[in-house]
Length: 103
View (cartoon, rainbow, N blue to C red):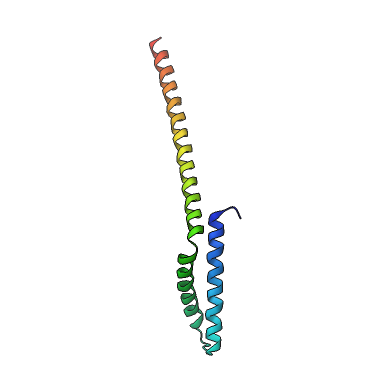
C-alpha cells in the first residue's frame, strides 16, 4: 500500500475490529446478553482501539501527516502559479487595451 492515509485507516479499523471481537468474547464469557451490550461493546472497543492506535501507530500517523502536508503544499503551489498566470494575462490585456485606446 503506497497511500499512507489508507494504510493508517486500515490499521485503525483492524485494531478496532480486534478490540470489538475481544470485548464481545468477554461479554459472551460472562453471559452478558442484552440489547444495549453491543453499543457498550462498541464504546469500549473504540476507546481501547484509540489508546492502542495512539501508542503504536506513531510512524503511520506521521507518514500520513507528511503525505497530507505535501499534497496541500503542491496544491498551494498550483494555485499560486495559476494566479501568476492570470495576473500576467490581465496585465497583457490591460496593456493592449491601453495601447488601442491611445491610437
